[in-house]
Length: 80
Image (cartoon, rainbow, N blue to C red; front, side, top):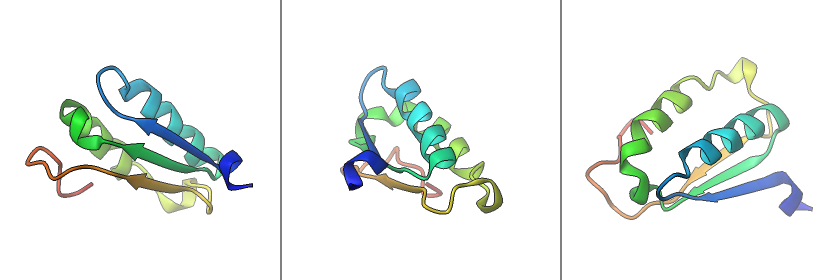
């Protein structure tokens, strides 16, 4: 089912590494990765921006999806 094909990470203090692992696993295994509450990790958004920029279509599983949820925040990078 779909639950085996997705990983959710609720961001907040200290969750950046967990989110990075989820993105890498999703990229390689074709998982849907949901990063929730991105507005709570504004200090980590620059790192997320780098991860997103490094996602090259020829090196990403075709089923991989990255979903982000956030409340409005001036710290959220437009490019993400």
